Amino acid sequence: MENDGLNPEEAKDGIWESDAEHGLDDEAWDLAVQLVGIDSSDPGAYEGRIEGWIKEWLVRKIQMAGGSLAGRMELKEQEVLPGRFNLMARIPGKSEKPGLTYICHMDTVMLGDGWNEDTPALGAVVTQEDGAKRLYGRGACDMKSGLACALTAFARAVELVGKKGQLPDRAFTFIGTVDEEDFMRGVERAIQDGWVSAQDWILDTEPTDGQIQVAHKGRTWFELTMDGITAHASNPWKGADAIAAMAEAVSFIRKSVAACPSHHDLGVSTVTFGQITGGYRPYVVPDTCKVWIDMRLVPPTDTRAAERIVKQAIELAQQEVPGVKGHYVITGDRPYVEKDDGSLLLGHLKQACDEVTGMDTVIGAFNGYTDTAVIAGTLGNHDCMSYGPGSLELAHKPNEYVPYEDVCRCRRVLWRLVERTVF
Image (cartoon, rainbow, N blue to C red):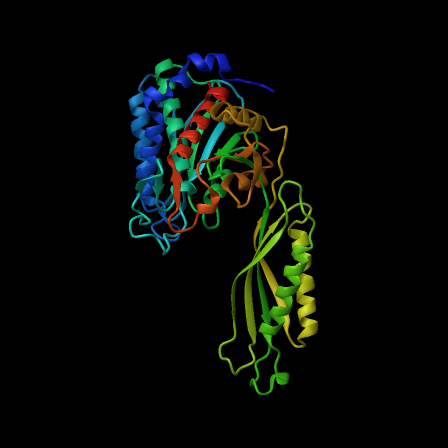
């Protein structure tokens, strides 16, 4: 396995051991606090304000670094949706080796209800609980603290390039994306415009509970519709009940997905019927019913297999409720991503994590779908993974928080990875 960075002995006498005096842990923490206080909810305020804030922050860092190479650093925006811009900052490398990229989404889910009075969604409140600091607010763990860690690492690399007066061996890029919490059009645009490639080493900083997470279940979405025939509820045999037919289909799909084979890394396939509409009065046989289906699929079950299940469900429903006709649309098709034990990025990241924590870091799977999963699935890139502060169990919930220790750990790992691979 190649090692293009500092070896452990060099690191002991170099930048790594000077972290405490530079106060970089607190810099990342303070940056996280500021980012959490900016509303970038999706749907809601969206990313306009936070993208502009990060852009100005990066401009200041590049200007502060100075030196003859400052002009060679790239800073780009791309408008993905009206008023919603991806942001990219890049330090070019001297070699043609695959670049290292930290990709972070700038949006959060909607602010939501249920927040405690003393920890409001945009309060960015820091508490001291049992001797441990916590940062509360929407996006605290998903993923503004990870965003802060990535930005801190990038700014430090900019500073080091300025001091050395020479480019690093490997290119280093920060990308901030929009729309990750919805249709993930930000990362799709980054792929389309060539901001990432099949060869790059790409890390997102989603909350991973201290694990490196390198595999993802596939995510397939269906809109399933049953069209029936109206009739008075006192004469139901004169109509065709679309809701009853949908009940048959839903039951068949649920049981069929549960019977799919499990996977040694990713576990079992699951299905959620997240939204349903149908009928318009209780005394009328409903002539339509529609359900939105979210399947999370593990190998060998893929979208084709899921489509067969839906078709069988429609056939069953039409048999059970004569007169009903079913049809569907696939609205999302994200392939599963399996772990590649030969990934060079995985090897470097595992060593960086183990060195920082003094523990054997667990390599696991990510339950959701991330920007790096989209890149891996679209480009066939096996060097895409997730590692970030906080716990996914707290994401998207009221009173979301991230511990200070998690931010420090992640910041140090992200910089150690830069040391190992970029310089």
